[in-house]
Image (cartoon, rainbow, N blue to C red; front, top):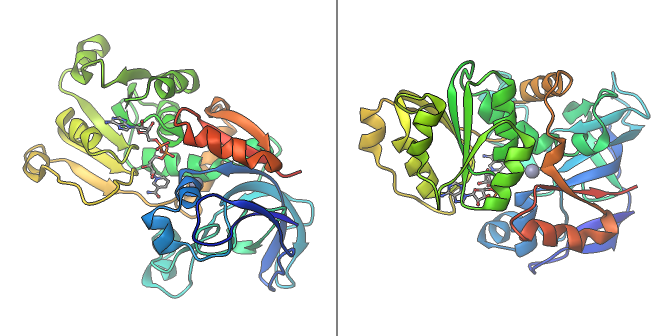
Length: 341
Ligand code: NAD
Ligand code: ZN
């Protein structure tokens, strides 16, 4: 099969021929149809310090996918050949306290496909049947291929009650933009999204009913009177990993505001803790998706009017992967989807 491989500790990825993976008794074999390129794949492409520390080589990369089940391990029940699916790319252990309590997304032994284990940028993927998420006919393969990052957005956005609340999203990357759409769908009163990149803000405005703010040219607090806000934002979703964005979020929250952090800062960053204490702000770190509650909720929302398709800005065949990564590296794309059929 064709597979997009990190051959060794070098920049870039290469399309190689690799054997179709063999599956164990509890696994399924999935014929991959579409895959999404993630920010994580860009770190792996660029081979930054994180990637060099984390990713073994050679490795088939990629973790955002949709496809069809073509083989079932002998213990697998409840799934069928030909079934369309996406799946959770975090492979969890069964022994930790968190897993035994059913909090699978908090398992400290989590390993990621395309990061620690062989991934989904290939014609076939072996996956534990436990991780498979069947797709209803209403969700096509390209949306199926972006459920992983949509899941990050949904997990973060649903961290706190949003109904009637004024929500600030910092960072209009694909995940921030989808989180803004989710917040709207979940009944937020106003959703404001910030970025320093105008192309990204323009895209966010096309995907979701939001008030975009370019913080390089507009004062964030100036939108308060326009939106009838008295004190500030009730809920903050940090989706940039940028220190200035987090500072600005803390500054513009109401007393008792709630913040969910998904963005990953590049290193240790200073935090004005006294500001957070005196504003009585609740902060929650968010990792991955809730397995499988987030999947349940996002599919339910997609089947009930949540529309994030416009966040997909580029579509390429898998053989054009270089163009796909170039689009991601440009910093102005939304989601980039590769077709493996
Ligand atoms: P992205 O890098 O595409 O988007 C981040 C955006 O933040 C960019 O558009 C950038 O211009 C913007 N930004 C930079 N400085 C800003 C500022 N001062 N104010 C407002 N915006 C600013 O990232 P993405 O793929 O959308 O992912 C969002 C974040 O979530 C990233 O930090 C990513 O590493 C992280 N992430 C975390 C998890 C997790 O499990 N915790 C999973 C996936 C992604
Ligand atoms: Zn991803």
